[in-house]
Structures are given as C-alpha cells and as structure tokens.
Amino acid sequence: MMQVRKRLCGLLALVLCVGLVLPVHATSIDDAKQKAQELENKKQTAEGEKAALTQQLTEIVKKMQDTESKISEKEDEINKKAAELIDAKNDENDQYESMKKRIRYMYENGNTQFIEILCKSKNISDFLNNAEYISTISQYDRDMLTEFQDIVKSVEKQEKDLQAQYAELEKLQKDLESNKNTLSTLVANKEVEISSLDGELGDAKAKIAELEAAAAEAQRKREEMAAAAAAASKATAASSPVMVSQVSANVSGSGTFSHPCPGYTCVSSDYGYRVQPLPGATARHDGVDFAAPTGTPVYAAEAGTVTHVGWFGTGGQAVIINHGNGMVTWYLHLSAFSVSQGQRVSRGENVGYVGTTGNSTGPHLHFQVNVNGTPVSPWNFIK
Ligand SMILES: [Zn+2]
Picture 1 (cartoon, rainbow, N blue to C red):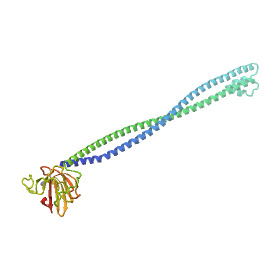
Picture 2: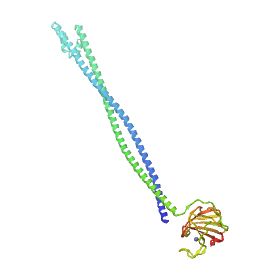
Picture 3: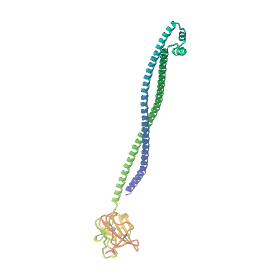
Picture 4: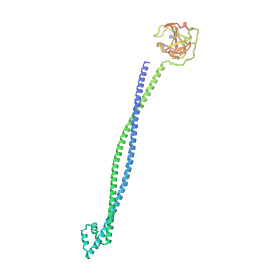
C-alpha cells in the first residue's frame, strides 16, 4: 500500500514536471514559427524587389540594344554622308579645274589679272572671295562654283548634324551602360540577401522541427506517465472496497435496533469470551459475527450519522455510525460501502456489504455496539 502510494506520488511529480515543461516548448515553437514567418516575409519582399530590378534591367538592356542599332544606322548614314561630301568636293574641284583652264585660256589671250589671283588663292573659296569683284569672270562659272560650294556646305552641315546625333546616341548608350551596371549590382546584392535569408529560413525550419520533435516526445512521455499513474491508481482502488450504490432499506427484528444483517442468523463468533480466538486477538469478543457471503447487504441498526468509512485496522474496511446519547455501532470486515463519511442515515438504510477484509478468516459481519465507548452485548438491542 505504502509502496504503491510512493510510486503514485513519484508519477504525479513527474506528470507535473512534464506539464510544466510543455508550455515552454509550445512558446519556443510559436516563437520559432513567428521568426520563420518573418524571414519568409522578408524573403518574399526581397524577391519582389529583385523581380522589379530585373524587370528594369531587362528594359535597359532592350533600350541598349535599340540604341546600339540606332548607333549602327547613324554610322551608316555618316559613312554615306562622308562619301557624298567627297563627291560634292570632287564636283566642286572638277568645276574649279575646268574653270582654271578657261582662265588660263583668257590669260593666253592677254588678261593677266586672273592668273595672279588664281595663284594667290589657297583654295576655291579663297579664289571666289578674291574674284568676287571681277565682273569679267563668266556668269556660268560663277553660278556653277556657287552651286557646288553650297552643296559642299550643305553636306558638311548634314555630316556635322549626324556626328552630333551620333555623339548623343553614344552618350545615351553610356548612361544606359551605367544604369545597367548599377542595376546589376543591386540585383546581385538582392541575390546575396535572398540567399542569406534562405539560409536563415532553413535554420529556423530545422529549429521548428527539432522543437516539435521535442514537444512530441514530451507529450508521449506525459501520456505514458498518465497511463502509468492511472494504472497505479486503479491497482490501489482494487485493493480497497469500492463505493457501491445502495439497496433499499430493510428494517428487521423486534429489538431496540433493527437487525444489521437480516436473515443471517448463523453466529460464527458470539459476544463475550471465545474458545479459540485468532492469533493476536483478545480472548474477549466485543461484537457478534454473522456469517454471510461476500456482497450481502449490511443495514444501519438505527438512524444516525456515519462517522467513519474506510480502513479500521484489524477491523478491515469499516462503517461506524453515531446514534447520539453515547450510542455507537460498528460494522467491520466489509467488502464495499454504500454511504460516505458524514452522511445521515435512517434506521435500516443500506450502509455496505459483507466481506472479509482486515483480521478475518472468512466473509462475515462483525456487529458491535458501544455505549459511552464501552462495548456491550448487541443482543441487548437486536432480536
Ligand atoms: Zn467479530
């Protein structure tokens, strides 16, 4: 009995300890889950940012491709214009050359002024400026020269414009290149951040798994303890009489007290001095033993208050009723109870069942009457 109780206490302590440990685990798991969720959110944000940056990068790369093809077109245009300029300059020069021939012809026919101007002039424009006032130069030559010069000027201007556009495109491309580099760096940084978050997330998930495993183990242990405690408690209950529901009251006999075990008139040991007492028992017998099978109902001899229900030393499981005026009755060696301590009972009310608990050799009811604490013969009260 004591051993069982000690084991029970140990089990209960363990159950309590496991119970205390569990909420800590739960909190840790919640914390870990919250942390993982935060990391997950951060990662999603970073991935969103990376996607936006990558989108921008893609747009810039596309713009760069567009600009590249525009630059290429511009180069073609510039090359064409350069060829055009060469042609225009050739035309201008051809005109100059043929004009010089005509001037030389004029010189050979006596006009010396032209050849001087021609020799002093560095180029055709210079010549035209010098010859501007010379009215004798043929109108045809003047017109042709002016026309060719205008074409050269026009082509030169066009070429210059193209070069300016080319420079703008190149500047644009350079800016795009710079943007692209910046964005590439940002994307790379985002990738590092995401990779780092992935690592942290992996750690957090591993931690959750670890905590959950620990919690499951603790829960398993707790259930194991609870089952063991329940089994131990059941074992203890089995060794003591259980509470059984009452059978209906039975008032019997014509004495002052109703008979506690009606119909069982076989007295296995009477009140007074007995011949062969049990070892350890006194020779004097303080009650009357009624032989009856285990489970036979036992009834209150008189109305009163139940003052004891449970183990009562050598008397085994017992019910004691106080009837007032110094009158107390004992019902010993019971197998089961149907009343609780403190309960008010009426005469003939079922209080328990015959058994053989305590110092007993077989199922019987020991019925005892005490007057002011001294046992008296029950036969004075029951008939
Ligand atoms: Zn007895």
